[in-house]
Length: 543
Image 1 (cartoon, rainbow, N blue to C red):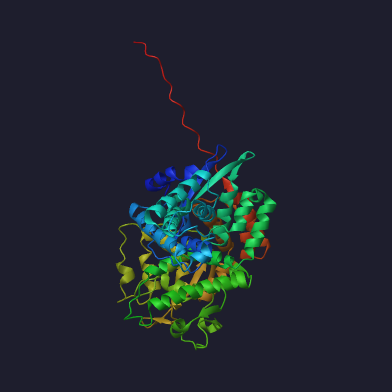
Image 2: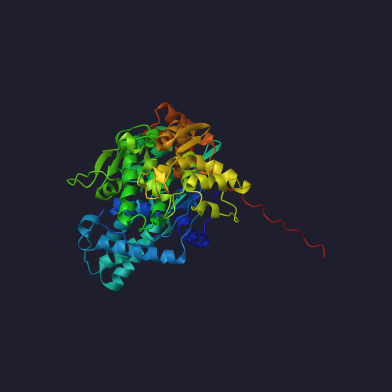
């Protein structure tokens, strides 16, 4: 079972007690969820607010995978004191770039009466504008006053308006209201639903992996996002934006667990073609293929399991052993049937990511496939398992032979019977992902099975996954969990049933699934406020 978590860290709660409760608090609302921005959400938000010329260089604290998704951990992870120190330095760096001579003419909407002293009105104008974009809601009068006072005081003490404004903007960037997505709910009949500004954030980070733009915030302000037709209007607008590709890449980066590639190593004596450049290119190939099929071609998501199409650069061409057109950085390439490379599972990224440094691992590959694509996590092995048989190649030449003998141990059989039948068909590819027909001089048996259906090789596995309804149901389940911050293992099918039905009826098009999910009431559903503890009852002393 995957690790779960249930509490926000004390450091975040302390910060939120200072800041978040000030701006959005209202008797009719209650806080329902806090989600920490991840590194890419942070960077995309800064680029969309201030422009891509702003350099974001800093260290972000790691996420952890819960229920198959990193996105889920953003609801339970805090920021450590050292992490907050780093984010404060980053905030100052960004604010400094915004107000410097190179950028201020474009990014600062007003000019001070004098650059050598405070200008309250100009500072308030800038704080109000960027405060709404950064905090994803309008600032209260008190919040504007506090941040403007800081800017005025620093401008006066430093003798420079832009220095003061820099500190005012930095205070916005290091506030929990920016670093965390704080969601509030309202009463909706007998149920509760997210308020308009929380809806705007949930939509924008699902579809664009970034902060709400000005139009989406206006739709929240005027109440448009509180109505189904208003939500539909904004979803339609956002679906045709180029930012949708950013959102889709972010989801599949998480869904396919491509972050694991950061820790992949290979024995370069065995695989001399391996390098960090190959690793990065392999990951990009997978993402380009996903975007091409699901967005640019508006194709069937199931075709990810059977497509021969790939996107190759010079480094990948050398590994795959195919000719490369040096007139372009990336070229589209269709693998021939005899290559065995059918579907994303047969690309270097997925093959090399779940292996050992010096040899392939059908078990690791099978565990990954069951978990990622079928939402069926495999239990962890017992602590006292003897792996000596699996590692002994002196008498048993093929990994299939070794795993078969290893699985005679009853403690191992249940897990291996779950993963190995779909990992062994990929044995025609080694740990780097290069094709082979033999192992230690012995022919490789690439037969396998899934859900009672037998097949051969990677092509057979890809087709079996293509035809298995659990694959598309898993995509829908994880997209819902990704969007709302839920643990996919805890998500009930009823919560995304309407979206999944539309997905199936629409020919398994990802755009159909996203649009249906983003328009569904379940996407904005919120829990009721926690019941207040009963008041203590005082009793009179009888003494």
